[in-house]
Length: 97
Image (cartoon, rainbow, N blue to C red; front, side):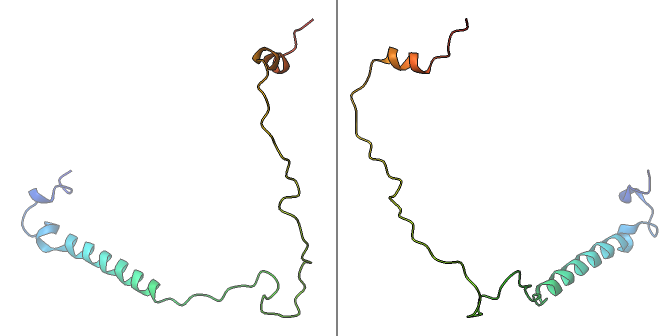
């Protein structure tokens, strides 16, 4: 347990007084910063084409077709309200026989 209590260690054997722990921490920080800097300077790898080249003028394409946007439109007019009891009977579960 005494090895972890750096404040209570004697003069020359204390890692804080000699700066070992501080130097180790500083070297880790410097190595991480250098790695991040080198990662930022990395060139991007060329993209791998997954299909036909889009710049190719002779590439086959799907035929364009026309579809009307209002083809499935159904006009809905307002209607008079029906009695609620009839509507309830229409959606109620069937009685068991």
